[in-house]
Length: 117
Image 1 (cartoon, one colour):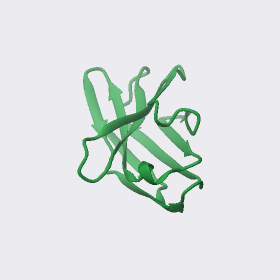
Image 2 (cartoon, rainbow, N blue to C red):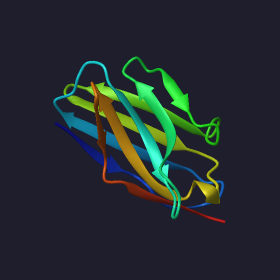
Image 3 (tube, one colour):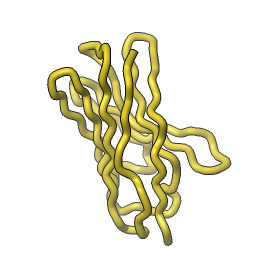
């Protein structure tokens, strides 16, 4: 089992920045993929960004150039960060941390990001 604990999020004005973090603990494989998805009210959950243990990254077109995903590994913990700059009102959503290893996908509890215009 893998546990995901998210932090960050909140309310920010358009053009501002926020940083999300997600710490994974438990039985973590040497190879895994961590990332972020988001879900706005009335919409389906959508992909934002992912990063592998080899630090290969992938971004949604809508966030490229504005968001940066990174990760660090400290003993048994794997932590992923999402630095969000130049935020727009359309970035408002609940952001979910995601961890995939083997054939299993784990989700965090979600953290609210609200961008006011």
